[in-house]
Image (cartoon, rainbow, N blue to C red; front, side):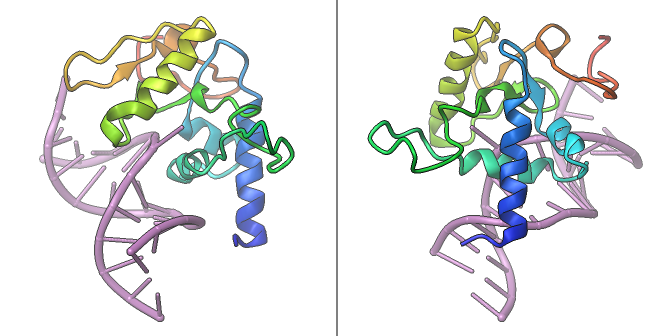
Length: 135
DNA sequence: CCGTTGACACGAG
DNA sequence: TCTCGTGCCAACG
């Protein structure tokens, strides 16, 4: 049972992720910045990791779930989709969901991770330098 | 209770 | 370009 503060953090993250426009991506770090905690990129990842899957038989079981939180639109600062174990199955599902909404994903060649071109599909309102690439 | 892990990010070498 | 080290903190065993 998470503390109230932790629960608020989780819901804040899910709310922020829901603001990412269809067909766009942003980074864990950017979500953290939006919420006022620039150093908690990792915690953002934790929240998505524990985002419950949508269960049709129990639609009201969770307020936030994989059906109403576009978790696939969150990638790392380089635009990469980390394998996160399980032989990269999770990453592949993420890539598929992104392609389904028109986002091009470069399939990782060999051991490399799949990549999204954030200069084209990135969603970085307000600040954000876009420093990772020429822009 | 405590050490380890990890859907991250960034600065030094 | 790369590794490597560090900050961060909830979850897990």
